[in-house]
Amino acid sequence: MWFSAAVSSLEPTRDGRTRVALADGRSATADVVIGADGTGSLVRPLSGIQVSRHLYEQVMFLATLPLVASVAECNRLYLSSQRWTAYFYPITGDQMRVASIVPVAESVSFRDEPGWAVERLRRFVSESDDVLDAIRDPAVFQPVPLGRLHASAYHRGNVVLVSNALLEVHPMTGQGMSLAFEEASDLGRRLSSFFRGEASLDEALARYAEHRRPINTSILEYGDRLYRSFPSRERYLESFDRRAHGELY
Figure 1 (tube, rainbow, N blue to C red):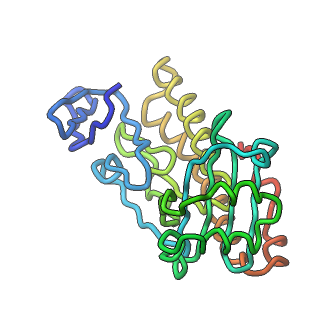
Figure 2 (figure 1 turned 90 degrees about the vertical axis):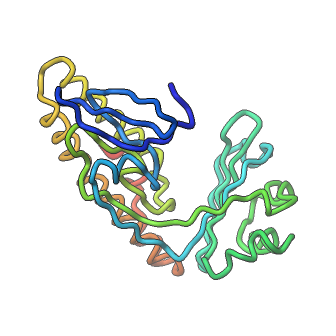
């Protein structure tokens, strides 16, 4: 494992493998290169796979704070018709993630005006006073612009994409991490068949793409529907699909 190792180039070798060159001068040669390096992926453009990203008119602010009782009890999700969302969930036995989705027009004030963000959240957060009381300084929140993307190809040669390098969906689906785990599991099975000699690499990666693309397209479109219906409780409930929040195999 090499940490903080930026990829500078991908070079095919004569034996059909790929040499991964790093910015610090090191390199490694692999039978398969898996790009799991997020929405700003370096592997994706270096492999020649195209993508366009559409930004939503929302920004997500994330912070990690000490765990409080209401969140230790269960995950808490709150929605506002003004396109605000608050989501609180535990990440360890003593820490929680506090996420708030804010319209772009109001995002500057979220961190720059102490107390304003908390009071704005109190308008629709009903059962998590202990979370709001724990927010002492909104400056601890890091902004994350929200968008959607779907790579034009799942693989090229022996380079294959997973997770946010491949797909970005609106967080209201609650499926970002689930999709990443599903893709990794599916790709692992396909690659196992290749390394066992049961399928060529092209066949294995084609089966991965064939299986995942309709699932990913479906959840991407579902996230768009939730985003568009956000301001209306009735439209949101009509769009909400319980099945889309479970395992998508």
